[in-house]
Image (cartoon, rainbow, N blue to C red; front, side, top):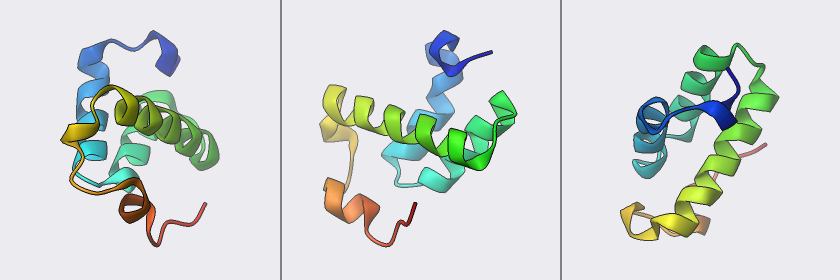
Length: 73
């Protein structure tokens, strides 16, 4: 199933990882649900992160710059 077809229930654990500053765990969950490779899962994670940043910015504990400090893609 493509991430674009996922329900909010399927996104919930990934969203919680992203809100909590655990993008690697979010990528792992995406890979488990889709069977996709690391690069594709990273793209899905980043797109979801951007969507959540726009729709619910107050749930993030860090600024965008702080969130991605030390992240290399």
